[in-house]
Length: 51
Image (tube, one colour):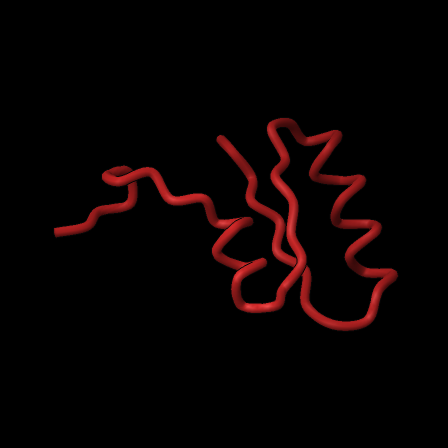
């Protein structure tokens, strides 16, 4: 019924729905910035890296 690409899942919205903040990174610069910020905060933070 489901595979990783059908339907397209919005992982950030799914995380938000469970009370977890998150963001999407489309390149490694953005990922590095988000990763640095996530390590400086308390609690979980989802980073969706689009490859």
